[in-house]
Structure formats: C-alpha cells, structure tokens
Length: 352
Ligand SMILES: Cc1ncc(COP(=O)(O)O)c(C=O)c1O
View 1 (spheres, rainbow, N blue to C red):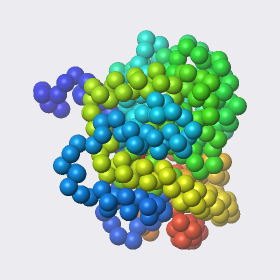
View 2 (view 1 turned 90 degrees about the vertical axis):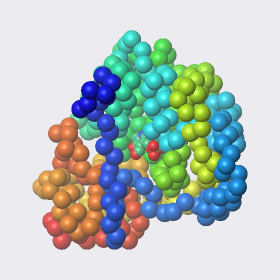
View 3 (view 1 turned 90 degrees about the horizontal axis):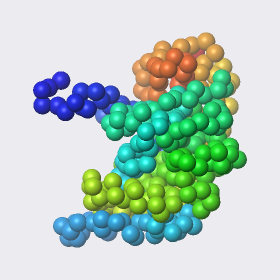
View 4 (view 1 turned 45 degrees about the horizontal axis):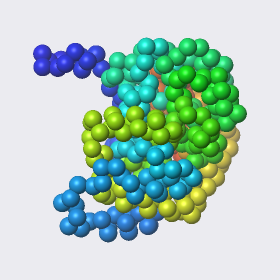
C-alpha cells in the first residue's frame, strides 16, 4: 500500500503464474510447457537475427509474422493480430472487445487470468458454473451479455468442447463477441478457426508457448473478422507499438513454417498423455478427459494439496489450485516426456 498508488492498483488481485524454480534435476510438470525444445529451424532463425540490425526497431505491424500465421490458418493477414504472448493479446481483447454495459460471461472454473483482466479494466463479469462433470453447457450462456470467453480445451480441466456446441453458441449469441482461447487446441481439440469467415463476432486466440515450444519467446495471436482485429490494433497502438521484437518475429515465423516438427512433437505429447492416463488410472486416480498437454486428476483417497507437497519432496512439481473447493482434490499435471511420466508414475506408486 502506498499513497502514490492509483485507486485501481489498490483494488488489483494480480495473477500468480506457476513457479519457475531455479533448481536442477526437477521434473517440472506445473506450467504446461512443451517437454521438447523448439524446432531446430527456430534456433537457426534466432542466430541469424543476432546482427547489427538489432539497433533498429522491429516492424510495428509484424507483417511477415502475420503472413506466416495467416498461411497456416488459411486466412487473410487483416484477420490476424499478434502480441507479446497470448496473455497480452487477451489483455487487449478484454479492453477492446469485452468491456460493455452488460456483464462478460465465463465459466466458474477456467483460466484464472480472466477475472484479473476484469479487475484491471473494471469490467463487470458473471461466472457460469460448469456442470457436475466439469463440462461447459452452452445453453447457460443464452442470456444478455457483454461478451463470452472460455478456453477450449478448458483450463485447468483440459476438457474439450465440441465444435457443434461452439457453433450453437455463436448462432444464439450474435450481439456480442465470443472469444475462444485455444491455447491448448493442438493437442487433440477441434479448432473453431474454420468458423471465423461465417461468424463476424468470433475471435480465436492462440499461443506459440505450448504446441510450438516457445513459452520463452512470448508470442501469441488472435484470429477473427478484420473489424475485431482493427479494435485490437487500436488498443495495441495506444499501448506499445512494438510488442514483437526482432527475435520473437524471426523465431515465431520459423516455428509457424516448420509444420512437420510441430506435428511430430504434438503427436508425441498426445501419445505420452495416453500412457500417463492409463498409469494414473491404475494408481486409483480419476482423470478428466483431456484435449490438452496436461491432465486434471484426483486420487480416490489422497488429498490434492498433500500429494502435491509429497511430490515436491521428490523434486516433481505439479500444479494445485486450492479454490474453488470443487477442484481442490485435483492435480494439474503437464504431460512431459515418456521418461518424466515414468518417474512421476513410479514416485506416485511409492507415495500411495
Ligand atoms: C488458457 C490459457 N490461455 C492463455 C495462456 C497464455 O499463454 P501465453 O501468454 O504464454 O501465450 C495460458 C497460459 O498458460 C492459458 O493457460
């Protein structure tokens, strides 16, 4: 607290990211990073970028990156917005498209950054309870609103929502923006990107932090109707003209272009996830169906917080959420390599 703080700062409850401990020999399964490094072509592109041109500002519009992203998604470049991680893209989305007189709607169990943005931008919101089995019921969102946002697959549950349900939601909700946060979509969830040319109020956000192994580079993007993209550009150009630096641009372009590497690494993660689910089920865990690079699992007897602490003593970190109480029994476990999964399963079997 300080008399120098503005009123809004006093009221903020900032987001708390998963920890990044500076310890060796950790099995780090807490922040949904990719266990595989970025494509070798990304490393090559980054090395080439380390030149004298760093004295110059980057392209404020990131045109070359937009071309690469638009190419992958079969869209036009005026349907693409890029930012410093999808968190920054989302922040602009909240301010540019989701702040209206009616409340923004999102699930009660979801990405915990959403209420933080509402606090920062003073956006009224209402949370919609997930069903008993943690699924989203789109009929719940059939009410006046200033916008709708949810991740697909949802986080931290990992449960995917079928494309037909998203389309149902879009058909009923034509008067406000529907944002589908597809941070984890590449690990086996159907993408809504194909609906963008049909629904002018649909905005889809993606990140290069997960399936493209670039959490350290900070690149995310939004895809949607040019009018929605223009709103984001207006906010971005009132905030930071150069969110994508020269390294981020070069690395992200190479990552988007190396489709083969992306497909191979996501396939490996999905295969490891299947083995992990089988192993944990044998150890008496209930695992929610996952379309993400993480699973959400609860042991039939042992408490979630206790298991998290016990795993930590064995140098394995997973994520645990104390609230809401409905998810307190669960562990959110990032899918790592086969070797990391083996260490996790054998440690759990010793502990249980
Ligand atoms: C649902 C969801 N959306 C967005 C993000 C933000 O990703 P980034 O800022 O790394 O692009 C995350 C990060 O974990 C996430 O879980």
